[in-house]
Length: 245
Ligand SMILES: NC(=O)c1ccc[n+]([C@@H]2O[C@H](COP(=O)([O-])OP(=O)(O)OC[C@H]3O[C@@H](n4cnc5c(N)ncnc54)[C@H](OP(=O)(O)O)[C@@H]3O)[C@@H](O)[C@H]2O)c1
Image: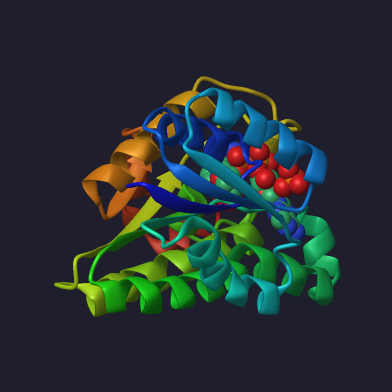
């Protein structure tokens, strides 16, 4: 996996994955909205052995811009082997409930941008009959919880989309990797009280690296979230609606 496009490349989790690809000598196009942060990540990856690191400043709420990124990566890297979609926001649920436009904004960032990238990436990789499409979704997409259903439903949309895309691309040599972390200690969760279920971005980033290389399909990380997801799915609806989780 030599040429990789990472969107939301300043994400704490994505940085850890990128470090492992950099150590393999990969060429990377990093996309993010914050030029200083992006430059610091790029310097770090160069120092860790990346063959080439390009950056592109993009606000990923801009879907037209998302739609052009695959072509830009192909041009800048001389081709593309993998896409990792990492951008995301954990919106304030109450603010979203009070403001449908804010909800749509969050939905756009967490679901529509990733889907736009995936459609373009799928077309490119399908034509080449190889490649890897990876997205960081979330355990939050497994069921719509009343405390977090705006974020959760955006992530669920992407997971369902990935499942269909995996079917479309089956037999083409293209892998479709849905990474579903539980709680990870990153800037996104800085405001949450930490508890034992929190994982480090290093361990989650390393799992993503392995999943992309292996072409895994659905990855819960850490592993025990697979069983938590199963239990969540088994809770009858009439009980689930009463839970304050
Ligand atoms: N942390 C968790 O517990 C957890 C659990 C499950 C899934 N996830 C998912 O993991 C992914 C990475 O998150 P993280 O935990 O590593 O948190 P993070 O460090 O806060 O990363 C979020 C990334 O999204 C970028 N981003 C947000 N809005 C953007 C926009 N409009 N344009 C461009 N980039 C934008 C951020 O850019 P800036 O640096 O410019 O803000 C940042 O790079 C996200 O998709 C998140 O939903 C996280």
